[in-house]
Length: 111
Length: 296
Image (cartoon, rainbow over all chains, first blue to last red; front, side, top):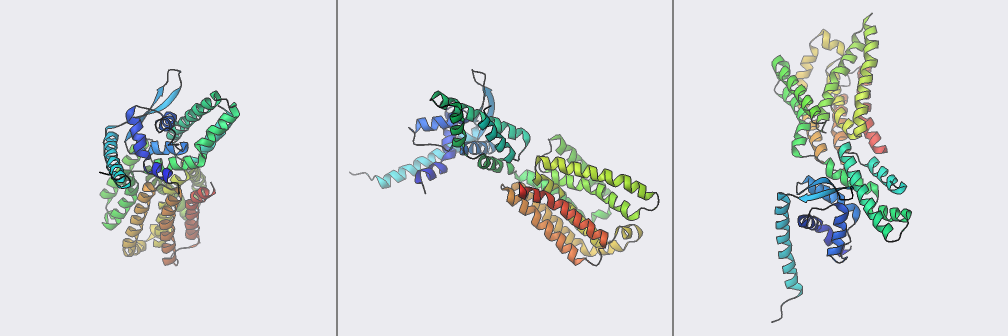
């Protein structure tokens, strides 16, 4: 089992919501942004992105809209909803508590 | 559109059995993704063919994405599940309360049923409408059966005209439904074997029109009729809530086949040759969509 992959899988929703919360964006841009912001650590399996986005949309955490780019091409942009922001806030709080607890165990303060 | 990308998207669309508008939108979304990726790879120095190959491989097998997208869209809400179960529950309620003998109650149910059909049609034929449609097919079939049994002289001419027309209408409706998804045809046809099973267990069509013996038989079977329609209601609701296609197929096939087998075995003395033929035909019609699903 790839531990990193399992961690990514367990936190996909949080990462997607976080990115979409930063700015409305579309599928391919999400993949690029995840790689860029994580300095290549998160290499998202592209095929799993769209089912995840559609699931979030079905749960009304995000909504989508086709929009024209300046070059005339259309892309499906995703926007976070109010419910999505609330869920994201809860997930981030849980994650911060969790990571602080893990850090406290694996890197105990030496006073 | 490049050949490889086009082929990839064709495979994806073939595997994705959801509403056509949603399917087209998702396909277009994947197309834009593949175009962006391919364009970037070409700018990085790859040939068009290589870029398309890498882009499609990075996205993964189209069948897998189609299955995952299907699982997101195929699962209906509890409200949809209730609407899908409602026609079976109404039938169960009619029998449980003995209101099926009351013309006013029957009329109210009929008006409500027609209103639901119009409402569902107006909404663009959502999945929950298909169990209702199954019941609308019943009068068409029952009229045909009665014509076969009761025709004498010129009546046979009417039967010969009516039956091909009715078959044409039935096949057309089932085909239209199946083109959207074989599973919807299965959901629509699920009540037919159960209804025919119970009807034939009560007597032959001749007996229905010439005497009231069937009424006595019906009274003794009411609790089991109610149970069988509640089982159908639960199966239809589960069909809406489940995600995987094989689960949906199993959840509909199991109770329907079990009810039909139980009714047929318990009442085999009352069923004549034509009755068995009708039962086997209805079971065959019901199982065909499942068989087509298993093949695809």
